[in-house]
Length: 138
Image 1: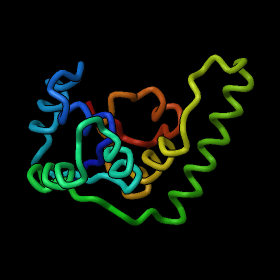
Image 2: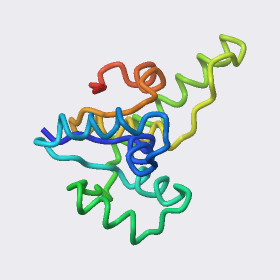
Image 3: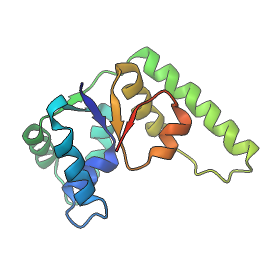
Image 4: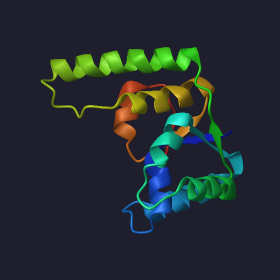
């Protein structure tokens, strides 16, 4: 089974001083056999990692065996939108105490869910609340 990666995992692996660097590296090693995938939004966010060029990102992805899924289905877009609506309503009811999430987070979760992929992330609570059926991997 292929596994989707969140941007925070890519960033942690690529930045040796990152607080989750060791954990990210170990996680990727432990589940490497199934293969990895990132969605187009993760690729786009990863381009903004400090001191990382597009060429370096592409080389890293190829070296580790991470494919980029450039297609986001209509179903994923709809699920992302519906999850965002629920999130915004939950925030309103709770008096905006829950952290505000970006649309890209919902796209990343919906992409993994509609593709039947598990998701490796260091922000499990946001994805858990938005996509209870999504398998989150350590």
